[in-house]
Amino acid sequence: MYDVIVVGGGLAGMTAALYAQRNGKSALVIEKSGFGGQITHSPRVENYPGTLQMSGNEFADRTLDQILKQGAEIEFETVTGVEDLGGVKKVLTEEGSEYEARAVILATGVKHRMLGLPGEEELVGEGISFCAVCDGDFYTGKTVCVAGGGNSALQEALLLSDKCREVIVLQDLPALTGEKKLQDLLLSRPNVRILTSVQIRALATDAAGLSGVTVRHADSTEETVPCDGLFVAIGLIPENEPFQSLADLNAYGYFDSDESCLTHTPGVFVAGDCRSKRVRQLATAIADGATAALAACRYIDEQ
Image 1 (tube, rainbow, N blue to C red):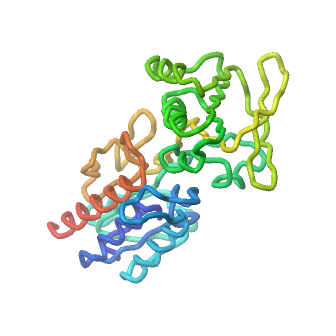
Image 2: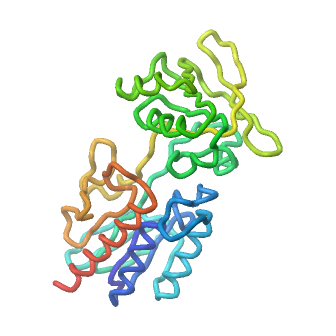
Image 3: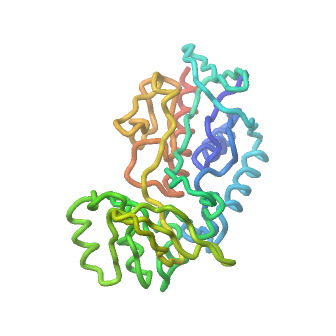
């Protein structure tokens, strides 16, 4: 029996385990693939206070080492559900394991919707990015493409247009779908070019990494658009359905919880990118982890 089980080993989940351990609670973190979450896609992190520069993998490794030294335990398994037994929560895994705890923190994260192209995953961090705030500075004075035409894509393109020589927006629909205000702002930028009704068909590479994207136009002609980077902004995918009996989901599948990180189930908390929020950054994930853990500790102490 653990005091706290954390589902997910991203920065929110590991921070939750750290705060639980430092409050005298035993913690188990169950992660299905690799610790660190989305931050591991960033080759350089330069927006975390107190740290001039580090790689996402380095930060994840340091945090994992920290929680292990604090006494947290880890398991590499895929959680399929959580049973609410009142004062005890039973966590079930695909591998057939069952773990019990007095409180559970769901830090399941999100995954970026990918284009589904050959070689795409290998280029993440080597030319393909998902966050202009995180990685935009690396492309200062260079040419980048942005895949997508919704609000997120347009916001990414606007941020990049302040730094890049040229920003090329690639939209597979006949028109952009983001807010008109964002469209107008983007169209007013002289270094922004918008291509609509184009499908990204392939990724071009050279010795340095990504060198361009091949697109197919509505008339079936193809061209390769040279670029130094590609920002993919076609949506995020939360994976919260297995826990919807414990925590409400909004229309987009995110946990419908505010900064308190509470759910309608006593003893179950949520943290990180899986939660409904306007800003998904390293700092906000860590803040959620601390908030959820402290709430879980208060819940346990009051039982």
